[in-house]
Every structure is written in C-alpha cells, then in structure tokens.
Image 1: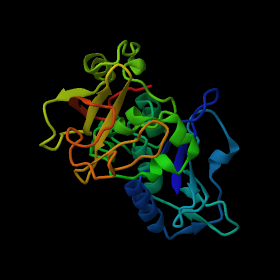
Image 2 (image 1 turned 45 degrees about the vertical axis):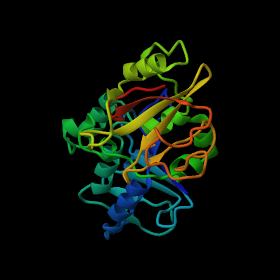
Image 3 (image 1 turned 90 degrees about the horizontal axis):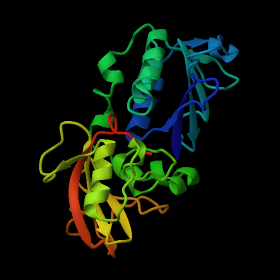
Length: 279
C-alpha cells in the first residue's frame, strides 16, 4: 500500500511528488472524512494554466482512499460518477501544502501559498512545524511496496527519511562527495549535506531524528535510523527496510547490534529532513 501526492505547478520540469507515511495517511483520511458537503462542480485546475494547478493523490491499495483524487480550491474530485466534495475552508488543500514542507523547494511553496491566499505561515513552509521535524514512525511499506522506491533509494535515503530515487551519496547533494571509505570522509560528506554530529542519542532532538553511521572498512558505508518508537531500523541498499539486525534481532542501539562486515562504528548524527539536501 502506498499514497503519493503530486503538486501540479511546473510546465517544463516534472511536478514534485512525495510519498506519505502511515501517520500522514491517517491524517489525510481524517481530513477527507470531515468533509460532508457535495457538489456537481469540477476543479477549475483541469482547464490548465501556468503556475499552481492543485494537488493529485494516487492511492495504491489503500482501502480508505479513492485511487485517484484531485484537490484544488474548494473542490475535491474523487474521479467517480458520484458527486464531488466541497471543502469550503480548503482544509484538505492546506493540509496537502503543509505535507510538502521539506520535500518541495520553499520558493515553490511560497508561490502556492500566495495563490491560496496566504493560508500557511512562512515559518511552516520553511520546515518549522510539520511531522518531518519529529522522529519518523517505522513504516517499511513507504519504502518497500513500490519497486521504484525500493530499488532507487538506499540506506542514506532511508536514514534521512527522504526519497530522492537517486541512491543518495553523502556530500553529493552539496557538490563534494566523499573521497574515501572511512568514518571521517563519509561523515564529513554527510555534514556538508546538513547532518550534525552528536555525542549520543539519549535526549529527544529539538528537530528531526537521529541516525548512525557505520563502515565496512575500505568497502562501503551504512546508515541506521532511530524511529519514533526509540528503536532503530535501516534499509540495506536495494533491499527492503527492516528493523532487525543480521541476527534478526530488534535494534536497540546500532553500536551493539550484529552489523555483519560493517565492523567500524563511526558516530551518531542529527538529521532534520526539512533543512538537509541529499542527492
């Protein structure tokens, strides 16, 4: 099961899209269920135009959502033969805009916000007040159910909780990728991307979540992520995200788990997906 939101705003470039996690899906379902007014109208965005043209929601086997939904202004088009919904307060549209924070260029979000009449604060569009600033839930389906996402995102993507479909490499997003397979080099690349080194993970971070870097000496790097349940999970390369180590045991601390050939534990980092840039 997966839910993908697309912001329709560009002409020459592909429109930005992102996957919702399980908590966000529940929030979206609740938002839609709160709308009771129906209408015969269609969203005006279907006629096209330059700039902001609404959001579309593609649901794959999510039983509480229609397979294809368009949201623009006060109309929610469920692509059925039945009536559409009328959202007088544009609450669903505003929620979708907030879900884009940290996933879409802030300048683009400011344009959308202006077209919506300034319904979101500038601070929230910079990444200050969304679920991306808190530890993510363990939601393997977000990474495992879509073969495209599964095969094109690695442990660094998963650790940072950002789907880029580029098999992200530390430092590449900011212009200088690591040059050697050791803790200092890979760690410095991650810090250039915006991750911050921390001595431990005992306290709750002010923003974002914790990750840990380990090294297979001279061969490879790997990242673990601390989730909202205070346990750790990871995504080994193109294989599924998982919350157990090489002995199939839950991971309470990656420093002490079975890491296979990744024998060198480097350090912990704080990641705020709303402010980092990985590629």
